[in-house]
Length: 538
Image (cartoon, rainbow, N blue to C red):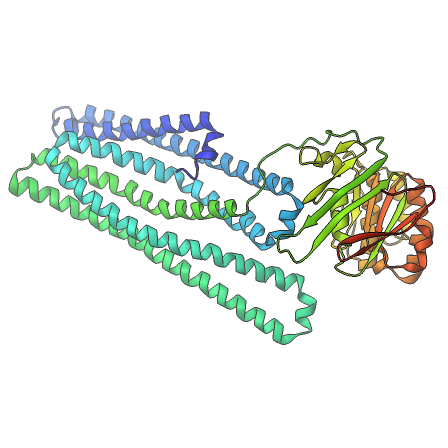
């Protein structure tokens, strides 16, 4: 239960109601058992009146148990709802370094399989809670009737629980293996979709992926089968042990006079009464174990804590300069590092970044945009140092089209409101997409276009946000020669006239004259190649 405690803590009032209803329903079960023992088995003279009271008690027990299960289910569904929303918020709050480092298939597995297993656990939770509490209270009642018989029963129940626990541990072991193999299955799904073109052109690679998938799928099947087998054994073992306990009770009572026949009958009836709740509790326990595995998998993602970042921590409206002060960045694998950089970006200028592949151009753009924080050194916006405290506010200065961009279909301004319809029309015309794409309700009607046209749509989305700084990572690389010329000679001047500061990674030396400054990255080091005389660099 320690795994579930942080979730229960957020619903403390509802949890108290659940506990009270569960205790009441369990106590009501004891009252019924006591009524059977003291009235139904002995009060033959007024049996009709006794049956009426008994019926009323049964109805009250039905109402209490049903209400307890409904409230527990409500609690479970609220917790799962909160867990889903918190998990997504944690992902959105996480640093870009984490997103780049983490295996996305593990995230997808957590958002689907893990959440589903946790949801199933809370569906079964009423059975575990009610069954467990009811068994404890019934055991107390049996001890009240006959201490000696109860001691034998207690030993027997302990043996039953130990045997069931051994089986449940095996269930947990195999469920954990299933969870690990599910990551591989999701990775194969992702590979089959993301690498479809390459797989179509290489039958050997396709066959290898299929064989690897079959192996992972077989592992899931085998471990799931073992888990189900041990689960079935746990339930049946408990059932058989309870039936044997009934026989032992009558044997000790009839042949050794450990208790009266009436008390023995009541105790036997109590055992049969708790057999169902005990079996369902044992049956629900593996689901709890599976949820425990799911929680551990979510914890292993090392998501960011739930923090509401202050997007107004900086005065970004009238900024003039962004400065790198000996800022560097080192990747965890130590295969590449951005050397300490001193560099100033002035508002309103167009800067081109050039360099070979792997020279650090994209890393520099990630540092500039606040997606990465410097490993050493720091950045300033005018006089303000950029840190974790104000990074979310700083990032609101930027729009971008990176090489691995994601194309959102909803068009909005930088303040979250609907994008200006006049601006939409203008930019569709600038991007020569007005005959290809329509916008309905500020939604793009299609994104099924060529890569170059999709990049134009990504630029449309970025331009409509009307942020201060626009980062373009080799944007023109996927454009045809004619539109590449349009980009450099028409679109860049339009963007600059609209007040954008443009930081563009480019290899098109034919159009370098359209930049105010050109900087070169070489093995993680920055060199300035040219600068407008009106600008100066540190």
